[in-house]
Amino acid sequence: MTTLTPQEAYQATNKHYELPAELFGIYLDRRLKYSSGLYTNGHSDLDQAQTNKLHFVARQLGLTGGERLLDVGCGWGSLILFMAQEYGCHATGVTPSRPQAEYIRAQAEKAGVAELIALELGSFTDVEVAGPFDAVTMLGSIVHMPDRTAVLRKVYGLLRGGGSLYLSESCFRDHAAYEEFSQRPGTKHVTEGIFGFADMVPLSVLVEAVESARFSLTGLADLTAHYHRTIEEWERRVGAARDHVELVAPGMSEPLIRYLRTANAGWGYTTKHYALSALKSRMGPTEAP
Image (cartoon, rainbow, N blue to C red; front, side, top):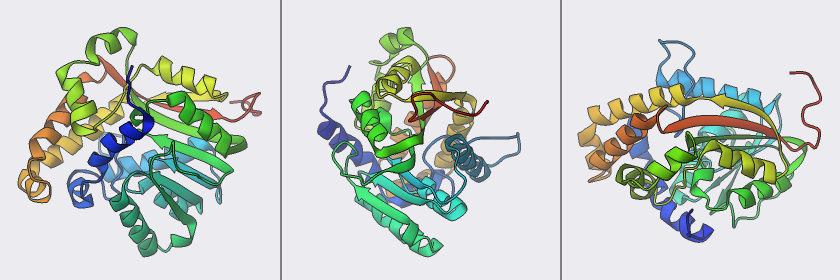
């Protein structure tokens, strides 16, 4: 259990996301989506896998078009830009990084969806966001927030009645693995050396937080194999462009490769990657699955 305050965690984590977009462009897909893709066959490339994943998120949320969407920890804007372009959503992103916000604004102008995109700069625990929203997404962001239940209660309050939540996160596969591996040097390199702060927990801890925030859990998907393949491709790209990485972010190539290899070594043994969906609804879904 971490003793960092939300503000301390925000300041520690923000250093990673202040790195230049050019660095992430070396190894991520064309949208700079910094989370698992979704591979439908053995021939899918990274760009297609990330497009598949974004459509998957839209389906899990039940988007039909024109919804108000909030993305907590929006990264380089891949999700909010996609949902604005493909679904006509009015999308708000929260990011701790000024470079990310500037990048997203430029991409929104370029794509002709600037009027559909809003950005809040800072930690989600501190920023004031104007709801209600029809849907909220959290892709790999809650791991950087010490008080998961408080964050999810805030999300709950920002959703309209019947609104939907999509949350995906990397987890220890059980409490025994968490106790044994969370403090090991390899884990610390990822959670503290790369990200500054991340508290990866078992899935059951996330489910408890979702329940405590009064959500009705509606779905669970195991995306572990897809994240393994995604990071495998990220590592390949970093390895093939070490000189470029060093030019953009001196000294970053070795820590980055170590982080990617450490993450991929644990999948299925000590770690898993899950996607949760939930509703702000006392009774849950009204239609048969």
